[in-house]
Length: 383
Image (cartoon, rainbow, N blue to C red; front, side, top):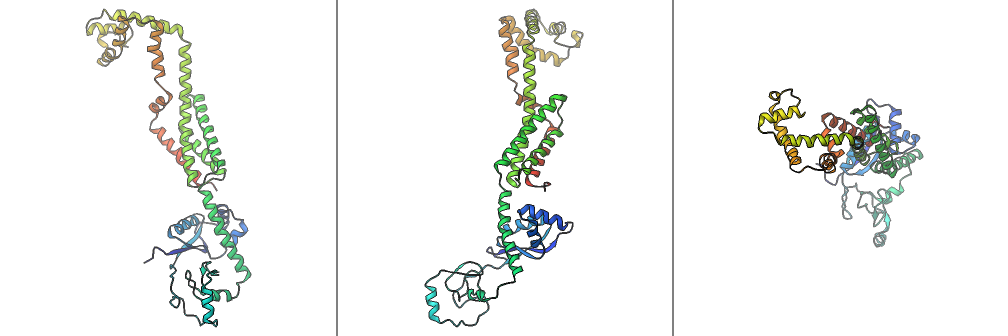
């Protein structure tokens, strides 16, 4: 059973997964980790330990990332180091050192030496390292590796440092990415309004295009990862709903201008309602009410008997109280305009219209736009 202290090495087998070409893997590796392709070729040319001594979660994250670009990767557990007292060690017993015991005592008093294998501070160079268990003086006395192997080691070390920096960068969002996403969202909202006004109809798939445009804008600025994906999704939501809001706001302004230019027609409507209010005062009973509705245009029926119960109830509940009020206390034209036209018009906002008109198909294309923006912003489909 593995201990919670167990660490793992992320090991590349030197082979690619089925379906991936070498050129494709080299390009993806170089792009993802900001490495020159010649160094990538060296790293992918043979088996390499690409990450050493990391936790299980970190190792699994690395494995997934590397498999996505075509590398055959495995995780090799490393037993946790066991610190032991001098004389108790799991390392095979070494030959006794020729250095006198008194020298050990002096060295122990100045713990300033470093293990050449793991870099941990050790008390002496002749006792086992408490972290990795090797004898430092034995490591130092070993012959140096061949130049090519040293070069490969440096390449791997550079890879580890660079790739970790690249990974952190991919999960951050720069100012350039913020500006690119916001600009794309603004253009998308204006595009939605412009197309809708031009054809007097909303095309749902435009939301999908807007989401894709925002995702590409952020990815093209060099930002990818979880933060970029969330930002792209939010910008897509703002752009799509913002475009609809701009359209309905413009439509409401047009209606307001039409009303303002219809002063003569509104005066005629005012006079008709005052006349209807006086005529309604003389109406008594349901039959007379039905006939009044036909005579004064409050029903599309051609005769009183043809007026439906629904029309009659609506007239009595919504129109009758207003006409009775006009009969009891006739308003001036300005008072009538404010209570009848202005208040009703101003009580409806573009947001109310947006909510009222939002339907199932709007929800589908909104989801497609947001998910597309987030996916491209995360880095899928943009390499």
